[in-house]
Length: 304
Image 1 (cartoon, rainbow, N blue to C red):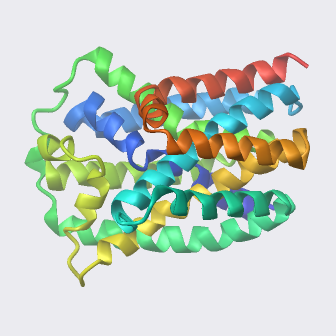
Image 2 (tube, rainbow, N blue to C red; image 1 turned 90 degrees about the vertical axis):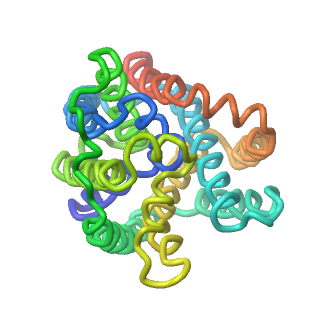
Image 3 (tube, one colour; image 1 turned 120 degrees about the vertical axis):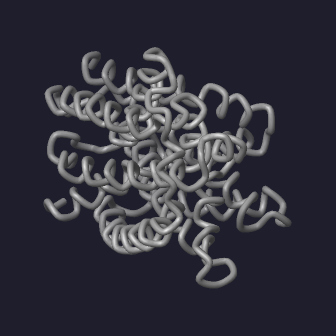
C-alpha cells in the first residue's frame, strides 16, 4: 500500500460507524454542543491512534477474529437497517442481507490490494457527495440553534467526546499494519467533514428536531431540493464507506482461520442481523461494543 492509498483508506474508515446509531447517539448525549464533543473527541481519537502506532504490529489471532467479527456484525446491521428504512423499505430483510454477505464472502477471496483499489474509487465518490452536501445545506444554517452554548454538563460533554473518539477510530483496528497505514492528516480531514456535517445538522434542524429522527442525516439532506430523491444519492456518500470496513473485517477473519469458518461466521452474522432483539441490543450497547473492540485490539498486541 502506498501513501495515497493509506491516506484515502484512513479518510474512508473514519466515517462508516456514524451512520444511523452513531449520529443519533452523539446527538442524544451532547445535544447542540455536539460540535464541541467532536473537537474534543478528535483529540482523544488522535491519542488512541498514537497508542496503536506505538505498539508492535503483530497481534493474537483470536483477538483479531473476535473484534473483526464484532465490527462485521455492527457494520452489517447498520447498513442493512439503513437500506431497509431508506432505500428498500418494501423489500424483505433477507433479500437485503444475503447479497451483502455474498459480496463480503467474495471480497475475502481477494487480496487486500483489491480493497485498496476499490477504496480509491469510493474516496472520490464519497468526497464529492459530501462536498455537495456541505454546500447544499449552508443556505439553511441558523446559528441560533447552537445557543445556549455548553448546554450539557461536563459529564455528558466528555461522554459525547469519548463516543466520537470510539466511533471514528475503532475501524482502524482492522488495519493490518496500523503504524504504516494510518495517516493522521486524513483522520483530521475526515473529522473536519464530520464536524461540518453534524454541526450543520444542528444548525439546520436544531437539537429537538434532530434528536427525534432515527436518521437525522437523511432528514438534513432532504433540505437540498435539487430534484426528488436527490438526498438518497447524497446519502450514498456515507453508504459507500461501509464496504472497506466490511471487507477488511472479512479478510481479517479469512487470514486467521479457514474459508469454511468464515462461511459459518457469516451465517451467524446473518442470524444476528435478522433477529430484532439482537439488533436492538447492538444498538443499545453500541458504544460498549466499540470500546470492547479497541480493548481487544490493545490486548491482542500485548498477549501473543
